[in-house]
Structure formats: C-alpha cells, structure tokens
Length: 360
Image (cartoon, rainbow, N blue to C red; front, side, top):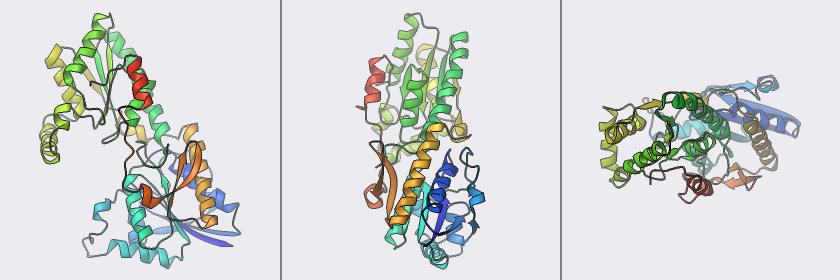
C-alpha cells in the first residue's frame, strides 16, 4: 500500500511543530509499504503557489528537539482565502489543483484557529484533511491541550521567576506581559506557576482600583514588591463594555501613547498610588527554543494518532486530546470556535483562594 501525503505548518511558529511532523511520518513509515511525503513551503502559501518538495526519512531525523518548523510558515488570514490575489488568482482553486496534481491521499495541516478554519474550508471543498492543533495559547476548541502550550508556559514562568529577584531587591512593582490576545490560558498558568500576585487575562476584565488595592494590601503586609502577570489582551471593565468599533478606536488611540496594555496599566498604577512600575515583555521568546519533554511526548502521540487516522482513511478531523486520550474530533464541530478561560475555571478559583488577585 502506497500513501501520498502533504504537510504544511501555518500561522505563528511554536515549539514541537517538527516533533509532531516527525510523529506523523514515523507512524506512517511503520504502517504502510511505501510512503511519499510532500512538504509545502511557508504554510498555505506553498500550497497556493505550488512550492513544495518531496521529503525523505532523513528530513525527519534529529528534529524531535528542534524548535521552529523545517517547512517554514506564514500567516494567511482565513477571511482573505476567498479573495483573489493581486494577480487575480483564485486561492482556493489553486490549493485544490496542487493537491490533485500530486495525487495526495491526505493533507496534514498543523496550525491554530485561523489555520483550522481554512483546513475546514478545504474539507468542505472535498479534500482529505487532518488538522493537528498547534498554539501556545491552548485556545483550540475540542482538545484539552495543544502542542507548544507547555513549552511556552515554561518560558513565561521562567521570565516571572527571573523578575522575582530584581523585584524583591529594588522593592518595585513589576509587570510581565505574556502572549495571548483573546485567551488568557498562558498567562493564567505561567502566573500561577511563577507566583505572580496579580493576574490579568482577557476573560476577566479588571478594575484598576482593585489592582492598586491589591498592591497596597501587599505593601501594608510588609511585602517589598508585587508582580503582575498581564496578558497582552487584558481589558478593563470600562473597555469591555464598549461596542467593538469604539473599543477598536480606543486601541488605536492607545497605541499612539503606549507600546501595549501593560505600559498603560503601569502608568495608571503610578497615577493612582505613585508606585514605581517596570514592564518586562518576553515577547517571541515564548514561541522559541526547543520543545519541553511534555510537548515532545504530546506531539509524538498526536503525530501517531494522525498516522493511524490516515491508515484508517478517517479524514476531516482534528487529532486532539480529550480526557487524556487521543481522539478524532470532526472539523465541522470545532473549526471557528475558541476555547476560552472560564472565570469559574478550577485554576482561577484555586488562584483566588491562595490570594492572587484578578483585578475584579
């Protein structure tokens, strides 16, 4: 039995993309008589413009611990997929033609929410698709865990750990800004793991007065410093009540004065109580470096699960984790949905029980 599969990595990079592709290929190599693997360069762009190369087992050797992606990646917004390019090219039709030209049995797509929506679009167009959930945000609906998340938690936690020593030495308020525009899972987990005193995430709008009260409470208790873990998408209660258009206008105005929400919060804290505040932004370091052991294991399991789905001819699915087990989730059930942090999440409640403030 011969299998021809295509693979691409789309959207922002993260740890364990290579480990996951390795799992798929190794799983198939031990299950089929002959395997052809075509890797598309720079995500959907390679599929659209026919930029690909045949990969061999050597390409997947030694990449278990390698960060980034050997295929390259790019962002191709889902909302633009039905819009012709500057030369009038129909992108969806071009992707289908590339798929059929190579006589693929399946296209394996590694990516986050936007990537998944395009994967589902291609499924609707009749292609055999398998999606593998990648994101440091852990915000993909239908799976308990995404690969890249735990590695990013480790890096963000280390950033908070490192801030502790300088914060305590100087007796300052420090803000560590963690990635996450819409979902605060990464900030929540890193904040708890790093011992942050205040955690601000998009799902729980904050009151700046509640934030300053928490800082002052620590000071009165003899604490020399306070550390805030702030998601880049953190939002105040006032802003959360604004219509989307008004909020967008406010964000545009804020960008002219502050680099990000953390700097605005720092200024507000200073104006309210006069505390000296410093901001640290780990930024894209959270996406970089080698995958942690947890992600290597998870990626191997997801990759092997994808290989078995291909052997079984089970397409149109995401390979996810549900209650600790690898499951096939139909793309039509999860595409386009975000997995948010509930204000009643057990970790949120546990954090509040030990005295962490969410500014609410």
